[in-house]
View 1: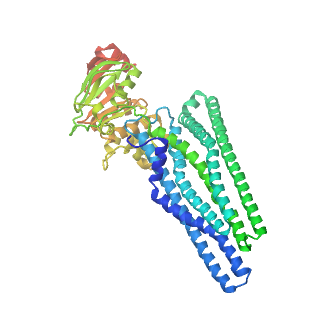
View 2: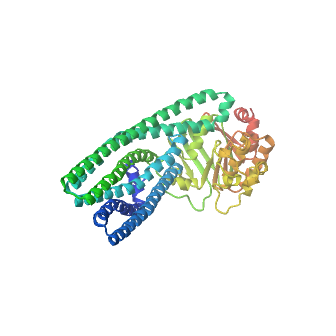
View 3: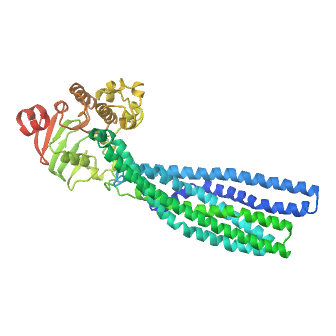
Length: 563
């Protein structure tokens, strides 16, 4: 893809793309942490200079200084957190777009081996986790400044206490990083298991009607229960690892603060520091666990982000179904389609020329050969032998996006989307194009009449508010509205009644006048409206003639379309 699509590359892009907000948030966060560290020092000074030796004027002046510091740290926290959160959300948004672009890329391949639910999980939760690293970095840098500021201020109060913090804080950070390693592995397993559970759930929801028809609900529930339990157990293991890491870090931090307090108490008893310095030291000792615990949390977030980044990288770096192709189609396109000695899977030696503007029917007696032919035409795979040409240019030389802007293969199982009927019809239509002719050709007016709001009526997820025949008509209207130079349609009317099918056959012919149209179907109504029909039997072309002639003269054809 040109860019670094490794896990580290994903993290680098997520951070570098929001560098400005990360830097701004870090600076403001550092101001907040510095202010927090200054508060106990100022209180100690007030004790020494205005309380131990009462002085009303000095007390008022120092209180003003304290108020200014409070205002500074409040401003730093408010706007620093806003900048860090904005960086996190923007990075997550960009990663979601990257994943969606890769999934929708013309050369495909990202969905191979990944159910829809898993891809959704990658584009949402994994993107959120990697984006959240920007917030973690913002807070982590501020926490480092807080620890350093606390150590410096402690050094001013007492060199032994300062040295203790300077030595102890890096040790705690190193321990936090070491303890986060198991969490990274557990987090990756958790996300994989959650994605699998989401995929199973999406598959079950998509096929709920089929499951009910087969009365297989109990088996489906058992399957999901097993998957969900595995996801739950992985989640518990990850939570246990996070709790263990956090608990150990809190224990170590508590022991460290206790050591600081013990050393400070001995210094007070020995007279090395005064009452104000003691107050400052105790305040700083209470302050330091905050930024140190933030550093531990940053380590845990980094572990989660690494695991999620690896999953995002797996999608972004997925190999395409097809490779190569940079040329643009001829301009203007005539819509001539040629198959030269095409051989792939069950197809063997297919030679066919579809003339510009022709309305061609293709009948294939083997469903597997139909799928192979459609995949080759859509360039979801390249044939083992021979080639396909569009206006004289091999489709393997055309850029995938350019090919799809000229040749559209509308497969039988095309899905609809949640939204209005009109939104679905115009999803791929040229900007400003009138969708009405396409809807008329596909008899969508009858579908619209059943919806509240007519064409503005919502059809539900995957067209769940429509019947099977209605969904087919909307999908056909969408393909027609796309207005491609070459349109290949596979069985667009299998769930439509005979009268509507005859109307659609005439409508397609009228809507596609002057443009190349290939109907891969066994529907007599659709085939009767074509210029000629090609019969593919046993992987080869065995007959070619108008529909009426083939019905009269060819037994295999007659069996394929009339039974």
